[in-house]
Length: 193
Image 1 (cartoon, rainbow, N blue to C red):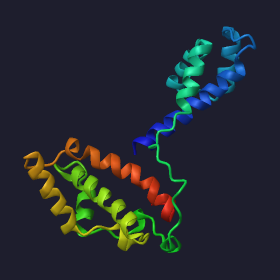
Image 2: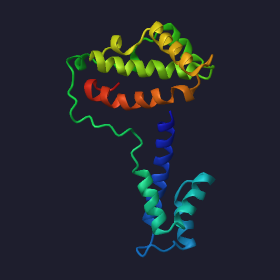
Image 3: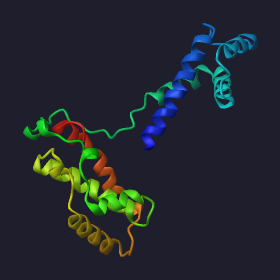
Image 4: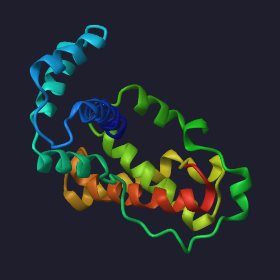
């Protein structure tokens, strides 16, 4: 979700940057106000926020524009080398996780994502799912959907380890990072996780 929102914002920012780049004089100086007005007049009444963003970009220095471009080209995914990973035979039967029928407990969890402990449950389930796919080389839903009992056993161990009644996202942050890294491996083995 964060990546989708961030990517959408970056696309809007990139479009605005491209529009402003077309208006920029070759020497990199500021665009005269009358040209800005004619440019904005050619757009069907831009939103005030967009107009403000475009005006800010017009006043950016060359270094600021380069920094923005570097940011837009930033790779947000984990750095995982999957060049040596081969497709597994079950990749032909790959089923994206989003299409798999979830356990009843996961379905309830997904309907109330903000409830205490639910994020930790999903982090644990996701981690166990990608770990299982890698270990068993099973790209089907059977390899991806983890039984509720296995998730709760893992949850119990973590609660004991941290001496807490309810696991919070801070307790499962490392599991989520490992899940995010291992998705790259699963994608290389199976296709889209």
